[in-house]
Image (cartoon, rainbow, N blue to C red; front, side, top):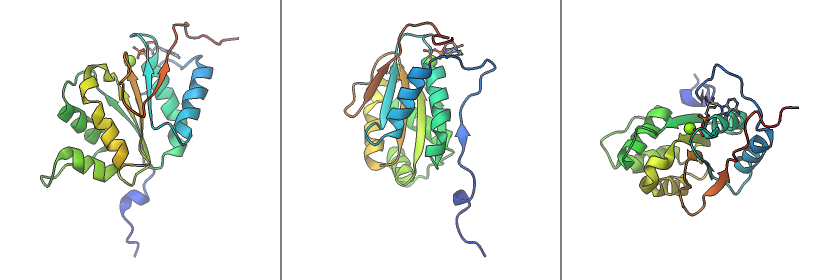
Length: 176
Ligand SMILES: Nc1ncnc2c1ncn2[C@@H]1O[C@H](COP(=O)(O)OP(=O)(O)O)[C@@H](O)[C@H]1O
Ligand SMILES: [Mg+2]
């Protein structure tokens, strides 16, 4: 009888939005983002730039390429409609399919759940939630294999945050 939990046998989820149009250009940026989040130092990378610049699209494409490195999976959490820390915690939990119990603070339960899991979470449109951003640092401190790729019009101004500014070059920028 196999007594291992089902999770260890199921393939890791790749939960990212799919676009009808192909991704184009941005090959240099993609390579840099993938390299940063593959390395040992960068665990929280924020893509910044004005709306419409291609941050979300770039984050999703980078996350797709990083998928093989994250055995717990890659998850996308849209934040545009959220305004509070508890909504942020709930949205992350929902994306992971994690259910809270009544036992302790949701943030602590989520941190405990993520503690031993190597996952990549894409947080899209974090600019509305800058005051809740320190929560991400707490999660990272308790979950050593967790990484965040964030899109935001403004940097989060967190310790340990790496900022990647998306330039205004039109995509497809590196077509030949
Ligand atoms: N590299 C790309 N290849 C194809 N379409 C892109 C690319 N970058 C952006 N787009 C398209 O341009 C629009 C705006 O991009 P988006 O990523 O939503 O910008 P932002 O998140 O910075 O507001 C979207 O429709 C998106 O699909
Ligand atoms: Mg966006």
